[in-house]
Amino acid sequence: MTTSQTDAADSMRLVAYVGSYAHGPGAGPGGIDLVDITADGTTMTHRAHCPAPEQAGYLVYSAQHHTLYAVDERKTDGRGPVGPAAAVHAFKVDPEDGALNPLNSLVAPGPFPTYLCVAQDGRALVSANHGSFDHVERIVKHDDGWGVEYVYDDSSLILFDLEADGRLGRIVDVHVFSEGGTDPNSSPQAAGHGQASGHAHCAVIDPTGRYVVVCDKAADRITVFTLGPTLREVSRVQFPPQTGPRHLAFDPTSSRAYATCEFSSTLVSLHFDAETGSFARIAQVPTIAADYAGPNEPADLRVHPSGRWVYVNNRGEDSLAWFRVGPDGGLARVGHTPLVHSLHPGVAARSFTLAPDGRFLLIADRPANVVRSYAIDESTGDLSVLAAIKVADPAFVALVELAS
Image (tube, rainbow, N blue to C red; front, side):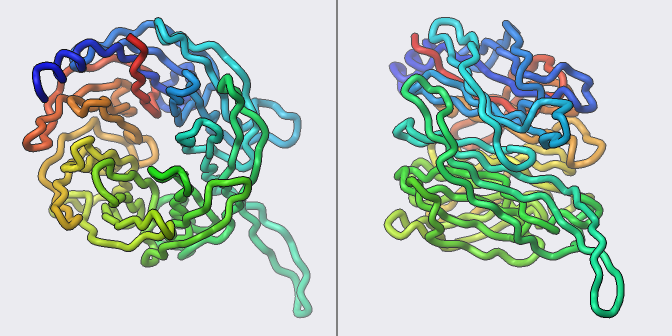
C-alpha cells in the first residue's frame, strides 16, 4: 500500500462482532460479543455483550442500513415451544460506538439457519437453512407386509425483504431442498448419513446482484437462482458423489469463484458467466497436507482483496491454509498455520474473516475459546499471529468498519 493508503487504513474504526453458541463445549452464554480492534489488528478489547440470539452462528452487516443480521441457529420446537424458534434477528448498529440495538426478528422456516447474505441494493436478505440430521421413522403397510419409511427435515433457501430502516420485512419466497446424495456415505458425519436429505449450507448473492448461489452439500450440487420476486433456478453444477460443496466466495478481481467441498476436502475454482448465471469448473486441489490421514471437513473460505490468495480453514487437520491463485485459476496450497486441536470436526474452528484492506485476518478458534488475529504478508500470503482475545464457544466473526 502507498503511504496515503496506509494512513487511511490506520484511521479505520473497526468492531468485530463475534457470534457464539450457548449450547456448546465452551459452556458460554451465547449471543454476540462486541470487540474493538485496532486498524492493524494488533490490539483487541472486549467492550460489550448482547445476549440474543443464543445460537448466533452466522452474522452479516449491511452498511447501507447500518444493521447487523444474525441467525439463531437451532431447530424450532413445534410442541410449545419450549425454546425460541429458529430465526433471523436484525440489530441497528450505532455508527459511533458499534452498540447493537434490537430492531426485530422473523422465524426462518427450516432447521438451523447457517448463512446470510444482503443484496447490494439493500432490499433483500437471503438465508440458507441447513436442516438437521434427524429423521422420523414411520410405520407403513405394504401389500406384502409391514415396513418403515424415513422422513428427514427439509433444508431451505429463504428470501426476506428489508424495510428502509433495516428491519426484516416479510418472507417473499422459499425454495426447499429435500434431495440427498450417497446414503450412507463414507463420511463419519451423522454416522454416514450426512447426505440423507438436503443440506444447503450457503446462499451467496453474486457481484451483479442478479443471482443467488446455493451450495447443497447433501446433493453434491451448486444451484443458481434469480434474485427477484421469486427464486427461479437458472443453472446448476453437479459435483461428483460424496464431494459436498459447502461454502462459495467470489473473487473481487475476476470472474472466478471458489468453493470448499466438505466431504472430499477439496478447494475448487470456477468461472462464473454473469450473463447466463452459470458456472464452469476450472481446477481443484486438496485442502489438507499430503501427509495428513485423519478425518477432515473444510468449512469457510475467503478471497484476499488482491485476488492472489484464497484462505480455507480445515476442521480435523485443524489448520488455516492459504492457496496461491494462478492467472488461469489454478490453485496451489503454499502454507498453513495450525489451530487448536478439536475433539472432532463438528466442534472445530468454523469461521474467519479478512480486514477490508487485507492486512490481517480474524478467526474464531472455537476449541481454544479465543478470537485470534493474524497479519497477512501481501507478497507471500503467509500468516503470523498478532493478538488473541477470550470468547467462549465463538462460532462466527464479522468485522465492521464504522463511520470515522
